[in-house]
Every structure is written in C-alpha cells, then in structure tokens.
Amino acid sequence: MNTKQFGKLRMFVYKSGEYYVGVCLELDEIVWEKTKADAIRHLLTACEGYLEAIAKDNLPDSLLNEKTPLKYRLIYYFGTAANAICKMKDFFSIEIPMFDGHYGIPLLV
Image 1 (cartoon, helix red, strand yellow):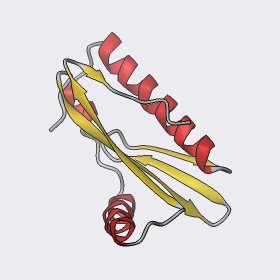
Image 2: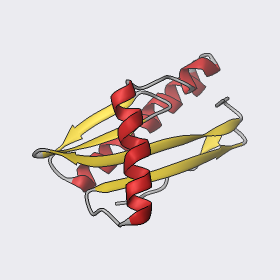
Image 3: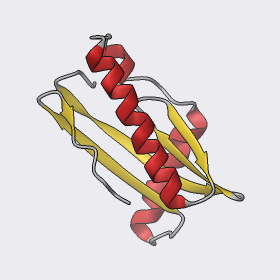
Image 4: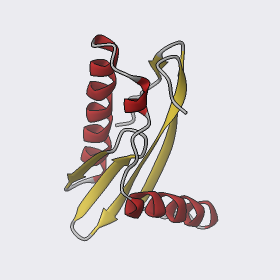
C-alpha cells in the first residue's frame, strides 16, 4: 500500500488502434496520445501533478491507491508477462519507487 512516505507507481503504455494508451495503475490516470513518446510524457506529467496536489494539500494516502478498471490491470499483467518472454515494441512498463515522500519520476523522453 502506498503512503506519502513509501510506495511505488506502476505505469505502462500500449498501442490501441491508432493511439498509445498510458496508464498509472495506482493513481487511475489514463491518457491517450498519437505517439508512444507523447503518451509517456503526458502520463508522467499527469502523475506528477497528481502527486504534487496530494502533497501540497496533505490529502489522504488512499488517493495513492486508486484502482483502475479491471481491463487496464489485466492488460498490465498480460502485457508485462508477454513482454518478458518476447520484447513487444508497442508495450512499455515501468515501476517508479518512492522513498522519503518523493517519487523518482524519471525523464524518459
């Protein structure tokens, strides 16, 4: 369970038709973009804003443990497993740890 002091965020991006869908499982953030790079960038920006709002307003830790719809959780688990077996160019996932109240959101693109 995530708290303001410790936790992790699981994020992934996959292709759906003409779009790339970016999802953060713990924050229930979902973005749709035309390119993979834009989906990653937009998802990281959305999550960063979400986390800043929680910290700034001292909102409850429960907001760090939202549940995305089952569809996205299944895509994450099946996509992560399939990606481990055969690298899929249209699936990208990352886990971002949090220590001492700060998530290490990287600059990926």
